[in-house]
Length: 299
Image: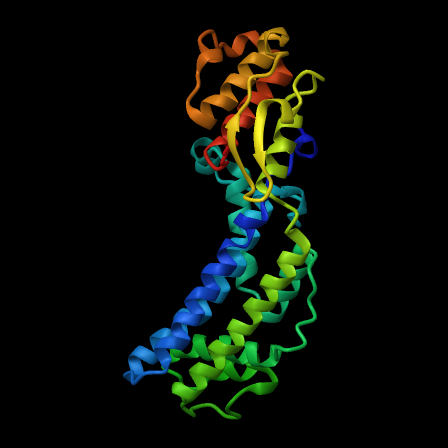
């Protein structure tokens, strides 16, 4: 069944989770850096800070693409025989592969693509992108050449490179690390604000309503007739028994039973569950529901 028929189940709360994790980690690093640390400890925290920022970008993109895969900028995908036979979820595999490849691009391209894909503002006026470029290349130099400047650093570190010739050893001291992590922290805050502005209306309740409307089209199966909704907490604290429930079809009863089973374990309508009783369209919808059920909160 074409992807365009499937509901968008993305929620802001889940989308922003990697950003909050990165923000918390960067703040923790800044707190620790205020104390007296050995050089190796400080350098380890610097690497952790840069990695936390990069992982945040990748994790946001992976979650976004898994919910809106048509945004993935590919024309074709190639898989090995092993992947075709044993991986099962090929879309997710290709998404992770594509995002991983993107993460190896220079940080300017990565950030621009990130903002374009998510349709958020890319004008980070309070952040020096040139600083960001240099920070990432210093991290690479620390990991791969013990901070001794090489041609790769000179070529890629940009306008704010901290050396003009090979062989110089860069300093990654307390002052540099605090400035660098503060730059990353400020950028994460701006990304958080932009994502909130764009996606705050993507609530869990809205996602569940889209899923419900994808599964049910009958006028006697209105979402609000079967579920208690708490908009303020973005939760579904309980279910309702509709007066129309006795009149729904067998296939609708199976879908309602499957939903309730994932909500509170109620399997009353699944006693005679049989996929063969569903037509091909309903079978596809049932398989889709089961494929997303483990990652979906129904309450």
